[in-house]
Image 1: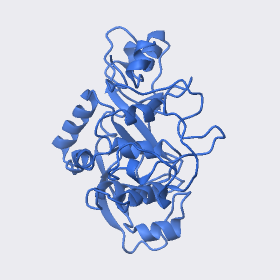
Image 2 (image 1 turned 180 degrees about the horizontal axis):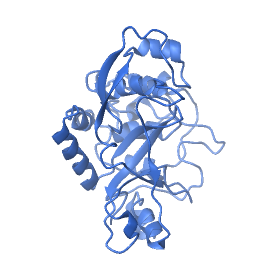
Image 3 (image 1 turned 180 degrees about the vertical axis):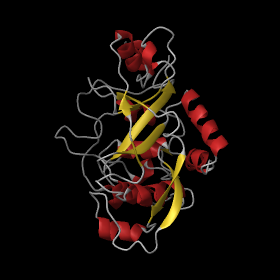
Length: 305
C-alpha cells in the first residue's frame, strides 16, 4: 500500500484513545536511554529516563500513529544505521547537485522519513514527515507535482496537516551569521524562547539546511512533547552521553549546529532558519482520501480502511 508517503513498515497502531506520548492523565512520558539514538538497547522501555529529557515514573501508554510505525521499523535504534542516516544529509554540505539529488531521493523514498524545521513566529521546533510529490492524474489537479509533507500525527481521529514545500527553498542550504556557542545559548537564551546574543563579536557565517533530516529514533523522542532548539540540543547531547551510546558529537555535528542556529532570533520572534510553508488543500474530496492513505502508518491501518 502507498502509506505515509510510500512507507510500507508492517505492524504498529492501536485503537487507544490516549494521545501518543501521554498517560491517561495527560502527563508526558519518555523512553529510556536505550530507546534513544545510540542507546544500543533496542525499543525496550522502562521508567528510568535521561536527565536531558525531563523525568517521569509511570508505565508508557500503548503506542500508536508515528511512534508505533517507528517502533516497528527494523534497525531504528541501531547506531550504525543512525550514522548512515545522519551522513546522508550532512554529506550534501550545501552543494547544488547533491542538494537536488538528496531532494529527489527523499521524495521518491518508500520509507518513513522525518525532518524538523522552524516555523516563522514561534520558538517551537516543528516535525515534518512523509514528504512526497503529489502526482495524481485526476484528483486535485491544481496541486499536481506539488511537493507535500505532513505536520502532526495520526492519533485517534486526528490527521496530519498536509503542507506544500517550496520546491527549492525547502531543500537548499542557507548561510546565516550566528554566535556558534551552545553554552551562551543556554545561559543567555534560556530554554523557551528564541534569543539574541548579547555579544556578536564572535559571530560567524555557517551554512545549514533549513529542513533538517533526523533519524526516526530522534523523531520518536520529539513525538513525546514540544521542543525548542535549546531543549532539542539538550536531548541530542543526552543521547550522545547516554550509557552505551554509539553516536558522537561528530556524528551529530549538523544537528547540533542546526539547533544553535535555529535558536537565534533574526528579529520579530523569527528564527534565522525559519521557513514559510503553506497548507496544501483542495475542494476535491479525493484529496482528503489521498491524505488519509498517505498516513497509514501500519499494515493494520490499511487492512481496516
